[in-house]
Each structure stands twice: as structure tokens, then as C-alpha cells.
Picture 1 (spheres, rainbow, N blue to C red):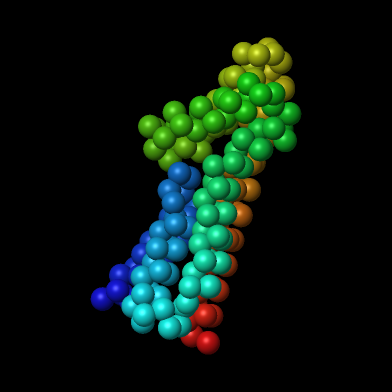
Picture 2 (tube, helix red, strand yellow):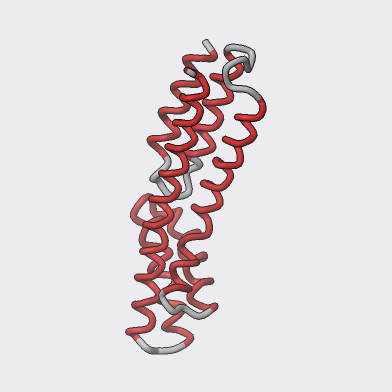
Length: 156
């Protein structure tokens, strides 16, 4: 039963990894823990679980930081970075489009409010979007690495 539940949780976690604000990597890690527990941690032991937990934590942190870093890379001031963070929070209430576009709009609006230069505000917003996309790629790569290492540890 634990094995089946663990595999289902891993699949759900991997499917959820690209979604913003959804802890897909943490769900997949929880599934790995259940799989390890199913055979009393003989195939996937404590050392592997600690390493995989660090990877899962890294994937979760990436999700929270890359949009703001993208805004900064796009030339945003502190106002633009704050706008990206606030836009991301407000966007949660508008579903997937809000979560994706909220940081972009927040960064652009706050940057424009600080300095009414439309080109600079647009660069801040686009930088936020690019940071978000880079975060999705990195988070997905880390989650797949985590599941791959767990599978290799389990089967070999």
C-alpha cells in the first residue's frame, strides 16, 4: 500500500512541478519517502533521503526567488522587485494566468510608478517573466534529478 501511494505521489509531484506556487518537488520527495518506508529503508536509506531532501528544498527555493532575480536582471529597481513579489502573491487569486502574469505586471507597474519610463518598466516585467521561466526549467530539472537518483538507488 505504501509503495503504491508513494509512486502515485511521485507522479503527481512531477506533474505539478512546472506549476508555480505548487510544491511539486516536495510532493515527489514525500512519495520517495513513502517508497523508502515501504521496504523499511533498505533500498533507499537515510543518506540518500537527506540528499534528496536537500534537492527538493533547493527546487522549492528556486520557485520563490527566480522571478525577483529576473526582475533585477531586467534592470528593475527595488520597487520593481517588490512589485514582482506582490504581483506574484496577488496573482495567486487569479489562477494560473494570474500566477504567471502577476509578477510581470507587478514589476512593470511598480517600476513605472517609481520612474515613468515605459521601456524600463517593460524590461523589468519581461525580466520577471524570463526569471519565472528559468525557475520552471531549473525546478523541473532538479525534481527529475531527484526522482532519477531515487530510482537508481531503489533498483541498483
